[in-house]
Image 1 (cartoon, rainbow, N blue to C red):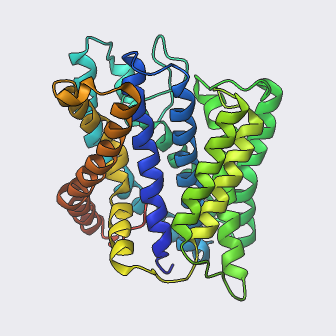
Image 2 (cartoon, one colour):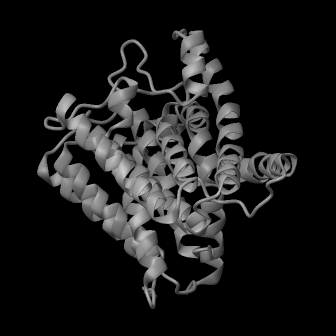
Length: 366
């Protein structure tokens, strides 16, 4: 699949949205902002995750669409996904586990095993299923999607496509009879987690990939990343103005999904960068978005501890929060890029060589 340069930029935007979410949570938890600010934080983060999932569906289809009906293709796909996702996630689990212990929180063998094996669970006192690496809940969905896609590659093209497109809608439909979708509640155990409507975002990405594959000519929308940011900002503004809150109800999930699909469609543009230097920098941050996503809470933890010991902590809450979020976006993206260059990329390449499956690195949408 030809590298979609603007899609890489969008991955940087999505990772930054998640960073902004967690950066906003610090002042809210310390009482510097009204708890209602959580609505802003979580809306931004949910949209970032939605974008990642749609990108994942599009990229997986584009990279493996012509490989159905082969056990070797399925094995190669699964190996590449495991090499790309698992080692860095396991590495990230180590410092997060120590952070839990340092705070005096519970850390059991069961929690560790479930986290490492992508089995969703809710720790005591949690209102949603979260692993030790809290934001790793999205990887539980990613690995489920990769598993279904691997099985689909074993089948003939039409059967495989039907399996990819039909599995998640069927699971959501069955789930709705056991755990009603209205009112929506965050899942806290494996079965409702794996049958959550959020999985339909992968299907949307695959459908977008299909449309692109069969289109006689694809679009060349200019400035797609900027347009995508405008779409995301509009969705958040509408959510805040409505007074809606979390857990995100199905209607809002559908609206946010449409916004995410629109962003991915925009950034699948085949137009080149209008400002090559800016575009190249955004691509680099997109390449590093997995490391940014995994490790940014640890960076934020250090940043806020330092922030509270500087005169900046005495600024009016709104101004101080805005500056902290801006600083966090810069620092976490740079930190993620450093980890990508020094750890993630060398490790991924080494493991790819060891498994004999060296291929161009595919982006992970998490």
